[in-house]
Length: 130
Image (tube, rainbow, N blue to C red):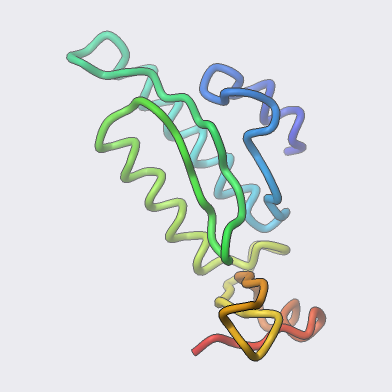
């Protein structure tokens, strides 16, 4: 699904068209499933108790994992977001295959980190973080 279709389908829970930043093709499914799960849960929960509508402010790649920032919701929405973040630690951000955390330099503190499968790590000359 291309970004424009994602923004169109989930416009009620995305704050603007700049919410999704640096999301590789491999993580697209994680993001779409996150948005779908939250939308379904929200449709059922609105008007019940003190549930506040969810608005995603940022979903982006940071240090090799998905950083998800949102307002509203409840503990269930937080758990859905956390599960998506955990999935990103194990999924190649370029292709969606099983991945591990790699860095672009041997000096991990100064390097760019990505979650990649072994073939993409080799292609991009990334080092495995153990």
